[in-house]
Image (cartoon, rainbow, N blue to C red; front, side, top):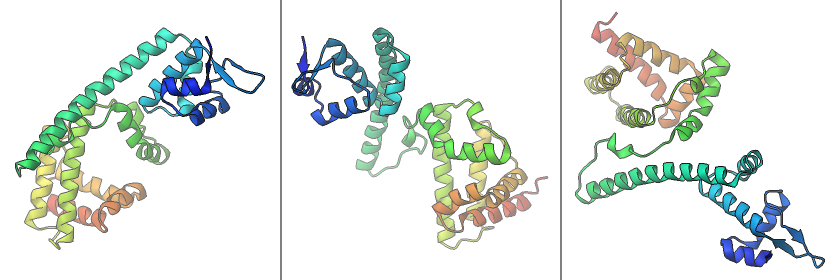
Length: 251
């Protein structure tokens, strides 16, 4: 049985324009084109369209979908892989719903959530790789260090991201409020940050943290990242870290 483009459009809940575009780019060709110029689709084309739409739901680009379908013509294998990807997304969405519900409850009660709990469910390994791509490229080109070679622990990365947000927001607030870089508020902020790192397997001495801050200040990429959050933040953090190291008496 053959179906017209209008019938396929209604079956799959996609526009006729979309089907024409898929034809134009070679992603989904009709079974045949009638003498009158009508595109006609068969069962195989319907199955391929379904595979395309599954991949689109998983946020693959049309170019990526074309490459994936060209590499694998086994429908069972394609569907099995899509099933695995959908299940992974379902687990993540379930966690996001739990996080959202907890956030809503906290907001209604006028309370605040633990900052690590606020970010549960965000970020997959692929998303972290994408987020770190620009930084990784910079490190490879300028320092010969490849982040892609390092394993990514998604829950740990999410937790570290939440701590980074807390620390940077606190530092930026101190800068805006005119608090001294060597004052007690900033020292407490740094102490808490270093304690977090130590508790999570990244023990760093005050002198090492000061050296890292100087590196961020001197490196265009990292300085720009900090300055984008608050003008002067890279300089402020560098001075604060050096003052903290001097005050701690670390070697």
